[in-house]
Amino acid sequence: MKDSNFLKEKNARSLWHPMAHPADSQANPPTIVTGADGVRITDVDGHEVVDGVGGLWNVNLGFSCQPIKDAIATQLDQLPYYSTFRGTTNDKVIELSEMLCDFFAPDGLTRAFYTSGGSDSVETALRLARQYHKIRGDQGRTKFLSLKKGYHGTHMGGASVNGNANFRTQYEPLLPGCFHIPAPYTYRNPFNESDPEKLAQLCLQALEDEISFQGAGTIAAFIMEPILGAGGVIPPHETFMPGVREICSKHGILLIADEVITAFGRTGGWSGSRYWGVQPDFMCTAKAITNGYFPFGAVMIADHVVDTFEKDTTGKAAIGHGYTYSGHPVGAAAAIACLEETQRLKVNENAAARGAELYQGLQEIGAANDIVGDVRGGHGLMCALELVSDTATKAPIDKQTIGTIQEIAYQNGAMVRVSGPNIILSPPLVLTAKDVTTIVDALKAGFAAA
Ligand code: PLP
Image (cartoon, rainbow, N blue to C red; front, side, top):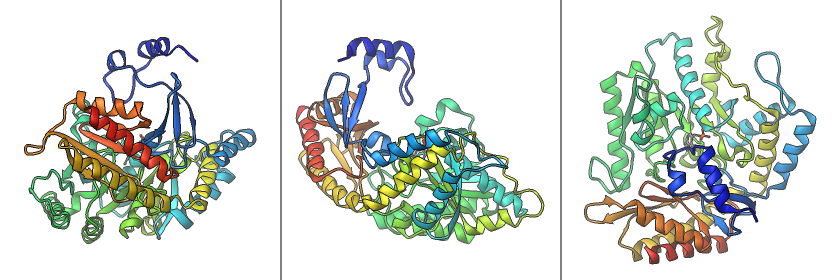
């Protein structure tokens, strides 16, 4: 066994972690994960726990998906890299594109543009949305609207449409022309409305108001997650996303569905947009497209946007955007194997069934613990507990208490994620009912100790 203290010291001396204060790893050494099997991870000290986080919302099929590992190894042997910039392509990326268009994307999304991850996918969609309007001669449509609490990655465009100050303030000035409307977040919203359907209508009205304030002709696109993920798992009422679609269509605004988390089964549907019965104009994917085994993403594009680009004769539609790793053959091979397994195992069905069990377990925890202000879930394997120090004032819980719950849960067999006052759960979609019980029991132990 490796000396964990020695490794932790070296970690603090040699790297900075995303989404953490650089000095934090000295005071709070991170868990050093050294192995994984199925839905379990093992740390350097030999503890084995169920991964309630699913890597980072991406290891949908667990850590032992042999067909993906084999596909990566075979592809590395056959063609480890070639670019898809103008003039070349590869067999794997062609096959993958057909699979995505034919099965996983909502109807009418008929082209794929490849990226190296979620932030790249968002950046791609934002850029192509602006370009779409310029090709059509609608030069004034440059602004973006999005939801408060939304998370769209960390590139400058994505950060500009993010709806959480933590990801913005220290990096300003961001892209001008980005505006946010309230999220359909029943527990906290400016309307003081706790009924999900009424709140959805109020948020839709806020969208209409913002469009009228900005001027519809100045707005390129509205970007949203079908279910807000990193912002604390906030599912909207079923009328919300269809309502957004209607408003965007009415005003000529493109709808970008950021499905970096919600695509490929996590919601219980094949995508979040399909789950809500909506056809977006762009769909951003990444994460589970390769089960997290290879950094990769794809933006799916609706046929009317495709037409605008492909029928252009002015040259404006030439895409001045792309990544060295767009359409990477190893990523494409990993994605094909991953999506075949995703489909074959019907992981969306397991996500729905296990998600219902997990949500019920969390509701029991909520009922038994005053510090649980809100329990969110009920749409596949995306759940959260929002903790407060006082249910009347809804003052957020302190870091130490939520940290203790996380630590004790870990000692009792489950890795859970803490983000602000939220405990977030996004386990692999292949977990069993017994694994769900392990997570819930571990959390119960955490709450008992808090
Ligand atoms: N969009 C959403 C909805 C996400 O949840 C994330 C990451 O969590 C991103 C974009 C950014 O993806 P990445 O971290 O792969 O760049």
